[in-house]
Each structure stands twice: as C-alpha cells, then as structure tokens.
Image 1 (cartoon, rainbow, N blue to C red):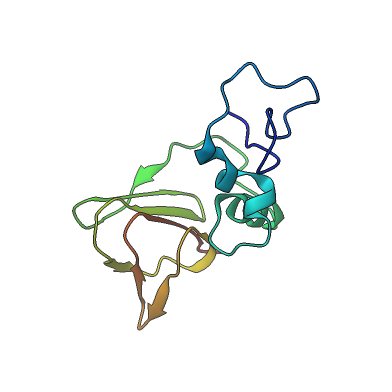
Image 2 (cartoon, rainbow, N blue to C red):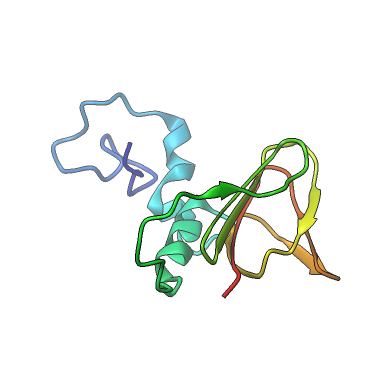
Length: 127
C-alpha cells in the first residue's frame, strides 16, 4: 500500500479524482506530509536507508547465515552485512557486529556490545 501524501482530502493526495479506497482518519498521521522531518518516522527511516552509501557485495551469490542471538532476536549475516531485529518487548544486548549503517531506533553501543531497543531493527557493516 502506498504512503498517503497529504493529511487531508478525499484521496489523501493519491490524485485529483479521489481514491477508490475509503478514507481513514488513521492515515493522516501516516502521510508524507505528517512524517517529513520527524525523527523516527517510517518515511525518514526509508529516506536514510536510500541515502546510505552502497558497499560492494560479494561477486557470487552466497546464502546468508543466522548469527548467534538472544531469544526473540533475529540476526543474519551475509558477507560484511549483519541485520539484527529485536522482536521482544524489552531491550536486548547483542554483540556490536560492526559499524551501524541504519537503525529503526536508538542503539546504545559500548565495550563491544550494542543495546537494541524493543521492536527495533539494526543494520551493521563489518567492513
């Protein structure tokens, strides 16, 4: 589903002719207009991801592998890239797999560990 453009209007900015979908008041704060410049918003996370410099990946296709992780945390590695997702309702401490490229929440790093907040995903590079 596309992100609505504006907070108001029958189509929330999807076009002049209106939308075939019924408008929902919940969409107003999910719009591009509402999320622009708001730290932690989905829109700004996507913008940061798109602005992250690309690093050369492996020349041949390799399967990713699951890294060691605490209960309720999904972590996988592929080459120099590590993704860690905390799906628990509490913060978790994991190894700091490298430099943080992008995170959907505030990550605290220190002494080789990373404290990842609940419901947060972090992308690391080991390069």
